[in-house]
Image 1: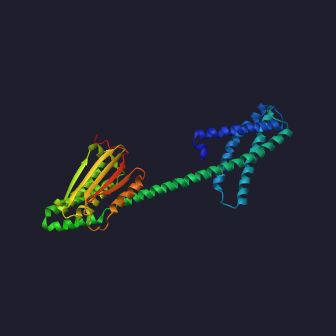
Image 2: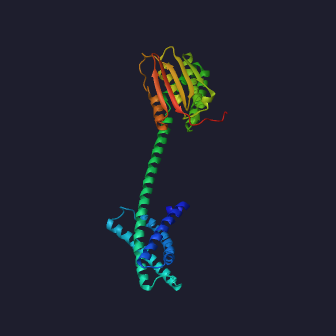
Image 3: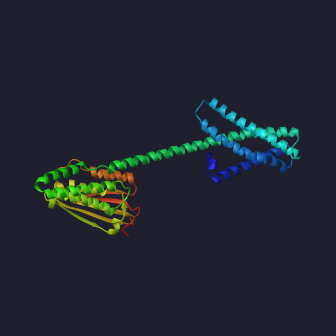
Length: 356
């Protein structure tokens, strides 16, 4: 369908432009051969309306012969032929309309009518050429918009793919260590091995469910982190303790999934696991204006050697934040003599009302 026919406002605007063209054409006829303005209006009015719709055919001519698709001379010949043919048909229609008006005593004499038809033909060629130029401009504009839309779609698709890849990364060391711990506990402590299997299954099931959603309540995100810590407590025993401080209102805030768990995993793997006496992982969540801040704090041994994979979890979270919202979201890292602190800052888009 022609883009001008896609909306009523466009049609009205288009016909308004052609009404102005009809006024100009009628004035030219009066100047070329003096006659009553009413006669010129009766002659030009219907012809202008007909040619207004005839010039819409330039849309299909331009689409079938885009610029650069053929040699300039050949393309120019095609366009000139279309303008001449359309104007010739319009002139024939004008001649028939003039003959009909003469039977009613309206119109010019035969000599002046020839000049009128010549003027109509020339005007038809010029108007169709202008219509061709306008349609090429519209096509160029639509092509630019389509290219911009494809670029945006490709960027969105790339971001979604990156997000899915990042969210799908599950630290294999955690999974392997859990399976090794289960294997070791099977003989010495079957009950703990069974409990660890259940906890691991619950954790994997929850992580998959949360990862499939775009936004989750912060309470569910913190619950997943606690499931992970419950598995690690089976491995580390009393060496690992957990403290959590958050308000129910904060836990209803919707946040991207699987952002807190890598921070907690990093706290255990590179903090508590490197200390003989273990330590406490503290998780605090609070709201500040339009933001939610989640802080994960853990002790670490400053003299312990750096373990393999250090920083990968934090880098994963940082890259996801850059993909999600690089302007508002952030990840702040600080350390004291023997304590490591990570603060995750996320904008609050909305709240889950399911618990209200």
